[in-house]
Image (tube, rainbow, N blue to C red; front, side):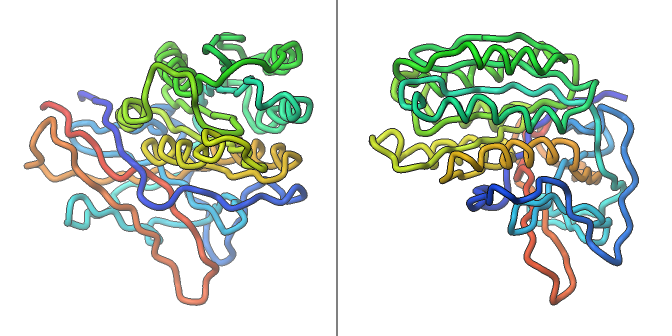
Length: 320
């Protein structure tokens, strides 16, 4: 059976409100629901469409940014174009993931770097032995500081010996990360972008990167340090990072207190291994090569706490 990669894009507003430093990163289990069946097949965690079925990764978070587990098939609805499609397979993916860390090491990070460089340890506590990661540092140019490794301490050491300086080529770093992930050993891919502001030195534009993010089979997460912006680029940072995460179906975590970075990294790590996968049959008459919009809706009983659903909101129909 032929399998083709496709791209979905994000449905709802993807900015998570400020995160409390003492907030736990672990998932929240809803009562009176059963845990969905685990999907062991690594390919099921990717955004793929074979000749019969589309598989859509979905994240569900509460208002505090906790991942919500315990939902079931009847809690979701998928609409392809304007037509509801039955969900014929349902599960929760915990497949291995390859993670690229894009870290702003420009001059504006100098006063924050002592705390910021230690925060990724919380991410790597949540990853599994089969996961892998690499580090790209961003200043006047983007540079692969540590290649793919399962020794996450090596990434911590690389940050330890990095000194912030220069301007910010953030979009160039994201582009490099998306390209480098094509060499990953795992079919599931994610980028985590850490910055205190926008871009002021890249050759690539946000329009180019947003389109590339929409087409890539990669979720982009961001940890945005929005603490007393001093320049126009820093003030524009949240909007820039939100556009990238929105295009890829990821989440932008807004941090106003530097000490909250650890919690944000922990939440990303938990999220990477707590995603639902919805399977449905796309319309047979969808024209090849065209972008087709989908919507994933969350169906909950009245009186339940407010939840947020994150996924991509469309795909390019593959050639037959």
